[in-house]
Image 1 (tube, rainbow, N blue to C red):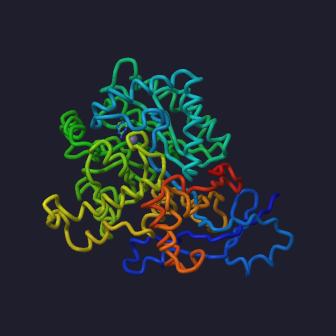
Image 2 (cartoon, rainbow, N blue to C red):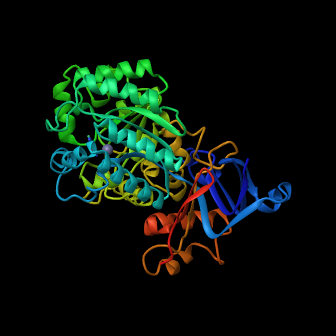
Image 3 (cartoon, rainbow, N blue to C red):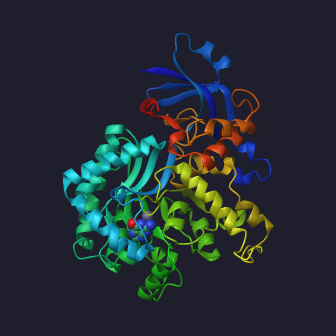
Amino acid sequence: MTLIGISGALFDFIDDPWKHVGREWEAARFEPDGLLVIEDGIIKDRGPRAALEPRYPGLEITHIKDRLIVPGFVDGHIHVPQTRVLGAYGEQLLPWLQKWVFPEEVKYKDPDYAQEGTRRFFDTLLASGTTTCQAFTTTHKVATETFFEEASRRNMRVIAGLTGIDRNAPDYYVDSAENFYRESAELIARWHRQGRNLYAITPRFAMGSSPEMMQRCEQLKKENPDCWVNTHISENPAEIRTLLSLHEDCSDYLGVYEKYGLVGPKFSGGHGVWLSNAEFSRMSQKGAAVVFCPCSNLFLGSGLFRLGRATDPSSRVKMSFGTDMGGGNRFSMLNVLEDAYKVGMCNNTLLDGSVNPALQDVSEAERNKLSAYRAFWSITLGGAEGLYIDDKIGNFEPGKEADFVALDWNGGPPATAWHQSIAFAGERPETMEEAANLLFGIMMVGDERAVDETWVMGQRLYKKSAA
Ligand code: GUN
Ligand code: ZN
C-alpha cells in the first residue's frame, strides 16, 4: 500500500454549471491551500491542508506551488492514426478523408509504424494534460492492440475500439463486415475492462458502414451490452445528404443509428453540428452523448455546433468535448476550449451583425457563452459524464482515480505572466473568482505550454522541461 499527499491549489467540480445560471461557482470547489491524499492511485481524501494534514502523520507530501491543480482532461473524440496528418491543407470532410486520412491510416497495418505513431500520440496527449480519451484507431486489429498496450503501459483510463468502415473508402482501406465482427469480438474478450481499458464498438460513421456492418455492430452491442459505442454524427452537410440518400427510410442522421439499436447510454456521436431539435431531444431521452469538437468543426469548415441548444434544460444532451485530432488541428483541450468559446459567441450573431433568428430565446444565447466554469467542467467531470465514466474520474472525490494536471498560468506566449496577473490581486489566486478568471485566461491565451505536470493514478508521467 502506498499513501502519498499532493498539496497545492485544487480546483474541481461537483455539478454541471449550466444548471446554476448566474451562480456557476456553486458547481465548483476551490481550495487555495488544499491537500489530496492518494492511496494506491485512488483519491482517499481531499480538503484544506490545515485540516487534513494532522490526520495523516508522516504523510509524504509533494508540494506543487504556484499552479492550479485540476482533474486530468478528458478528450471524448480523437483519432490515434491521424497524429501525423495534423494540419493538412485545404479540404472539407469527405475529400479530406480521401486525400489525407486514409493514405496515412493504412500505414498502421504495419506494427512498427503503429507503435511509433501510438507512442507519439500518447506522449503528446500527456504533454497536453489529457489523461483520458475515447479514441478511434483504424480497421487494423494490430493498431487497436497497440493502442491498448501503450495505454496500459501508462496505466491510463481509455476507451477505444477497432474502427470499422466497409464502404465509401478506398479498396486498400475497407474491411468486411464479417472480419470487423470477428476481430471486434476478439478484442473485446482480450481488452474490455482489462486494467483501465474500456472497449467501444466503433462503426466509423454511418456513411462508411453498410447495412451488414451496422447489423454486426448491433449484434456486438447485444452480445456485449457493457461495451461503449463510438461514432460520428451529423458532421458535414455533404456527408448528411449522402447518408440520407442511402437510408430513405430514415428521416434524419440519428435515425440510422437508432434503426440498428445503437443509441442509448454509452453511445457517443462526435460533432452533431447539424442535429435538429428533434434529434437532440431523442438523444437526451435515451441518455446518448454528443461530443463537441470545435477545433475540427472550424478547421474542416463543418459548421457551428449549437451549444446553447444542446444544453437546453428541457432536452439536455450528455456532452463531452473533443479535439477530433487530426480533423481538429490541435492536441490540447485548452485549444478546444478557446475555439468552443468562439463558436458560442459566433452562434449568437449573424454575419451581418444581427441577432441569430434561429435562437429560440435569450436563454439559448446565454447558454452559448462558455464561462471558465462551464469550460473546465466540460473537459473534466462533464466530459466523464458524457462517457459514463464519472464514477471513476472527473473530479477529486474520494474513491476516484487520481488523474490530475498542474497548470502553470505563466506558461504560454511571451508576456503571459504579465497578462495573466490581471486575474488576481496578490501573488496567486486566493478566491474562487480569481481562480476562475485565471482559468479563463489560460483557455483563451494559453495552450499546452500551460501544462506543467500530468499525473496518472497518483504517478507523475509528464513534467514540462525548463525553457
Ligand atoms: N467521419 C468519418 N471519419 C472521420 C474522421 O476521421 N474524422 C472526422 N472528423 N470525421 C469523420
Ligand atoms: Zn472524428
